[in-house]
Length: 333
Ligand code: FO1
Image (tube, rainbow, N blue to C red; front, side, top):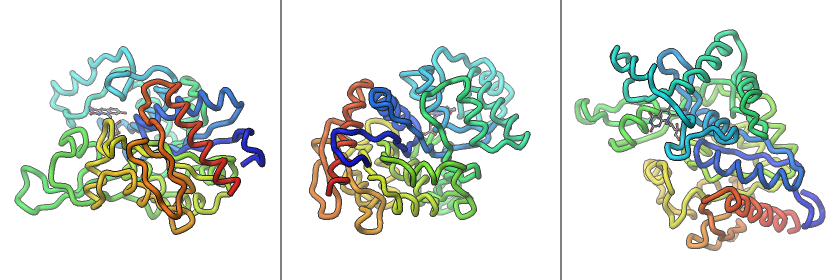
């Protein structure tokens, strides 16, 4: 962190999930454009799935399309001006999963990604190639080039009682809307998954690390579940400042509250702050930006309140500036 407060971070690394993370990165990019900073986004790949033989990376695509200004503003995922011809044909064939909608433009992304992966390119190289077209204006890194999918242990509605099964996160969220008895999240392959090239360097050699207001369990939780990433966050000389994904202790959209409930936590800014933990203890945070209404005090963490509604990019940039201000306080302690 620069020695004087009025200077701003020249390199910023952001841990992010999908839709909320993409909106937050629009604010980080705008802030960085004003200060000349370089931004690297480390994006969750736990939501990734293979459907109809195509490798789909929802969070990487949400970030890429949003920063490429091509995202559908209402749906939150996929592209503007989408058509659904191929998906409809698949449904007529009864080719499952029929509950997962694939847009025609989106299918082109998945075809390019799947072809490159099949040719042996790692996901990080594929992502860089896709970004050549979309020009997101930040460097996009998958958290890992290795598969590390989030599955959910549930009681299936049509199964015999107490017959627990693990289903893919996408089936849990898209097919069942997270509305079935759910017991646990499991990241398949977590122990073998290595951080993608550049990820640890982006955490350890930067002026500032920001944790986006993404789902704390299945997005940020998945990224920091990789032991080398968690260790790098605890080791970096950069301040690590998180922004709460809750307002009034509830998420705007998505299923953060449902996910917190499943791991036995209440839906509150304090519970998420405790989940991430302070670096003064065994966690990853130096500072925690929460919605004004959710403010609380913590002995080991600088907790500040601010408006957290990302109504537009300027509002989001103000959130980023609030996080930078906490980082300056941390650095000058
Ligand atoms: N979300 C849905 O609610 N319904 C869908 O049919 C759906 C399809 C889909 C296809 C590609 C993609 O990248 C994302 C898609 N999503 C869909 C959103 C996705 O489930 C979420 O973006 C994340 O995985 C959770 O944040």
